[in-house]
Amino acid sequence: MKKIFPVLLHSNNYTEYFNPSTGLLTYPVQDALANGVHMITITAGDTAGNVQVMAYTFTVSDHPPSIEHSPLTTIVSEEPFNITAIVSDDDSIAGVFLYYRPKMNEMEYLVKKMSINSSGIYSTSIPGMYCTSSGIRYYIKAIDDKANESITNSIDISIEDNTGPKLSGDISVTATSDKLLIQWDKVQDMDLSGYHIYLGPDMNHLEFYKDTATANSFYLESIDSETYIGISAYDKSDNIGNQIVDRIKAPDILSIPDQTMKETSVNHSISFTVTSDLITEHLTVSAWSSNLPLVVSEDLMITQTGSSYELMLMPVHDTCGSSIITVSAGNKFLTSTTAFDLI
Image 1 (cartoon, one colour):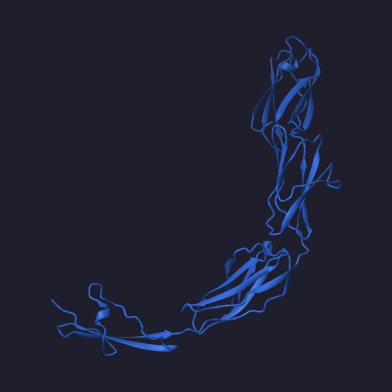
Image 2: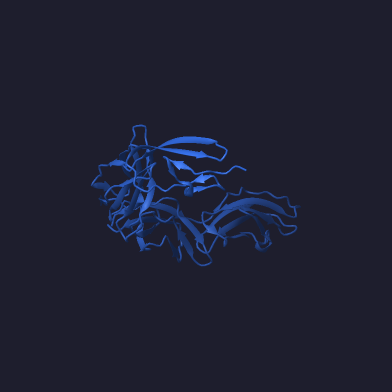
């Protein structure tokens, strides 16, 4: 059986740092090494006289990266703010990071990794939703592959806040049993102050209805005719953003053509479609006759499959003539009708 004899490192005995069971030599450097290239020579041998010498070189560097950055002093509100920097180092750059936060409520810093372009410039942007009247505070950190890092001083940016919060998406209207629930997408703006609601008979005659504060929904108790609704958001500087508009209207009944039945017919089936912009489970569809001796309204049977309906006509036996059949579709708030002749 071979035995390990003392391990020599630069002619010194370091056997105490060697683990024979794992074959691992671990030596803690006693003094700080100077910057530059260093060499270490290890000699190992056994009692059979076998000796092996290995030499390794490594580089010591404690020089942190250099960051060149020229900050802007003022930016436009609600617009993405582009941050650029030139980073150099004797070693490879492991990463460059932007730390930023709005100067409000002592928020924690958010972090984005900066990417490098073909010109060697690192860049990223602060999203517009954070560029509000409170201003922005940020700094840049660069780390090289030796774990040396540099950090710029914190930089404060003032923002000329002259842009209102931007609304996007559609207005959702849901008919409950007794109210209309109006909803919209919440604005992604750090200094949102509230929403203004407008109602009117058309897009050109919208009047202020209410302020919902920061809630992105409200209940409309009732309407008695087709109504347009407009919504806009405003911020803490009283800037009002864009307006989104939608129409609350009665259900649409696809036009039903006039119908002809033979006197000997027992019944007659008609298919039609009802559509509604409202999200509702409370849609009522019914029909009635203008000539009850010919068609009794109670004998007009309607069945539903999704938005498709079927109207079953059952005229009184041994009668002839004509009748106007009216079909109605509505909810608690708005109703529409269509009519056709039955001959």
